[in-house]
Amino acid sequence: MKRRIEQAWLGFEKMVLPATVGEVQRVEMRKAFFAGASVLFAMMTNGVSDGPEVEASDMAFMEELDTEIREFGGQFDAEHLPKLARGDA
Image (cartoon, rainbow, N blue to C red; front, top):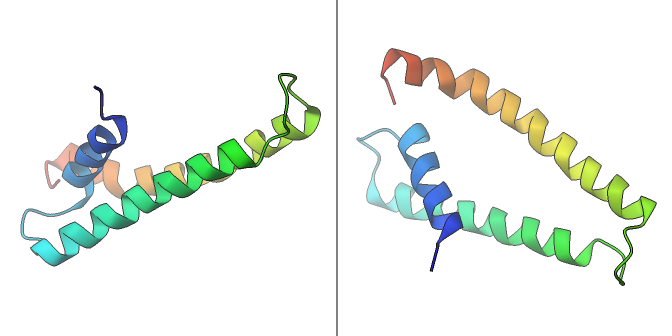
């Protein structure tokens, strides 16, 4: 069984958390990461129309999520990719 969210967490943890982070912070960050994944999944499964057909409102909903995630991703990358390039992560 693939544990996709766990694998994503491990990559995020490696990129973001310093080696000196305390165990309490690591555990709480993991909880927050999984909570975010849970909320997103719920939004994606409950926020679209019922039935087999994709509605225009479904596409608009997904585009809104995509825009918000990409905006955050750009901010995240701007902060963390330079650290990776320097070997600080």
